Image 1 (cartoon, rainbow, N blue to C red):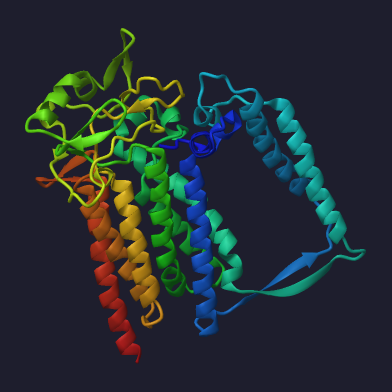
Image 2 (image 1 turned 90 degrees about the horizontal axis):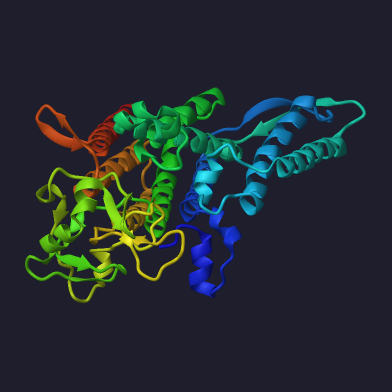
Length: 440
């Protein structure tokens, strides 16, 4: 596993650059997911603009004005926060604290913050000064929908994170009530569907205000959302963020994470060997008890697992993986490993993030191939909702999540939303087709 870029460079190039520890691999893949989404949606918007489905909007802007105090202040504020944390990570972070905990703490380097504030504030002043005119003038500009992709991506990022945190805390309500501030500002806990729903609402509102036809925007965004999700799941897999599946009892693993086929009854013996991990969420390290996970069960018989033996021509890790050196520091100690992340799951699980990356990449290719042949507005977006809901529902069958009882039917939050999205997608496609036929 590569919790951050320090581990990537150490494994690939044999160098140990501690400064890279603050660059989390999950965050890096999320950033790449947004870049890929922006690229795909830009291509689709330009295509729809050429078809005459989306038109530009004229807006009046004033050019030649000097930088206002508010402009300088906001740039300086961003610079201060960036410098406060970045310089702090490089020179002031306590050794016992990991990079993510430091970022979400109040600690930082004040001198670095002031330096970056001066640089960013000064840059804003100079940039506006170069463009200043003797007499500021108003101009009418035409802004096409694809010109607003940057704003759309920022809205998706901000409201996506807010929605993801809110939905995750709804799912872990008891923990949220016990420590609301800690849960809201913790480095972990993101629910994809919460981010998708809230970001979609914010972006649709923005599109309406800017005169962008929502039905065409959502169709353009559909393949972008699919590929972004596929790339984001790479981050989950590579970092080992805990978003994995249930245990695969057809396999067992050792304390280095090496996986092999289990003999009859060997999986049950492995559970008994690490009973405190499964029942109490703790392991014994050097004579002391250390809590490493919150996935605990009343007895070993309730530990979720499925037995699936992969074909011999495929690698074992495709069906059972122990996530050595995962970013969550979840599991038992790995002998001989002295790094900050030195734990491995006591038993292998299904690598569900890897499955979702493969499946959603294929679904993206399917949508990308079909997009030109789908002429009716909203059908592509309905198709995305159906594919997304169906994919997530089946993956949830082998993932570890909190179950809820709805009218006697046990389901997870993600399963319930996935079912609703899949049904909504089918309904949307039918209604959109009917509207399209009536208009013709």
